[in-house]
Image (cartoon, rainbow, N blue to C red):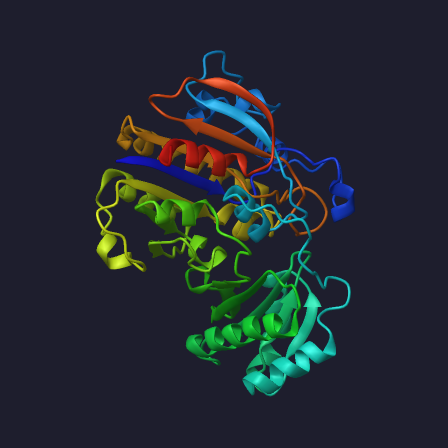
Length: 392
């Protein structure tokens, strides 16, 4: 069976796009470079051997004269710097018009009124752009008194609903998110994601529950490479939040994760054949003769990029690299591994939002000839490589 494994190290950009200032970013943003510097160097021997250090000046990552992979830098075509935009383009969909954002004013009153009416939640708190960890601390006491959900957004096109699941049940939160998703679609408001942000209070501190986060995404406007693989008798194994990003379209097997470590373990199991696919199957596929394993590793972005934690970010990158040793060992001659990112989120620059950046791409396969891919126009280059490997 021929397979492609795509691992998205969420937000690991490697340099500002020329138009970054139009997105509120500074030219100095460079997630990988600045994280490496903040950490006093990164230890990533596997990605170093693949040629990562050849893409720029990254402290601790040497340039490789004889790389074992193909390496390059991809330039985003789509108008955006968010998760949905980046992943859709990786899968072959270029977004010509940016999703709507509400950073400066919060959501219009008609949206809030409609949400309260449809959910019967009684009211909402906040309705501002804010850091998720800050907002739940700020409004937690009032949330407990009123039982109103905390609504917030960011520079991304997101409607985020936070509740303490000891106050509002998790299934109620999910139902409110489903209602909000349909509400935006019915109102013709082009919001990319409605995000469920459950938390609970641990030792007096509101703490988000990553494993129970869910993203309710606008449906892709056309088929992606996921659909192409599924329609050609292939399995598409979505690990992490991939199934949410694509609204399960083109996905045959799916499993959410609570951490990068879990996502990496599941990816390794999918490659070495120990993952129980029957338990995670969500669409029919009979005797597949090809497979696309698609993993999102969100900790770099969610836990460290948005929280301005460069040291934590660096450790997360190093953890990914350590897993590459068993992953590459488990690969067969008919597998290729693609490591990339979907945008930037530089924890060392002002703000806590995503940054508009180029992203690295590393492609390893035992039958592939190592080479410098240079600058590549479009993240959809990856979709083309998947089709070339699996469908031709």
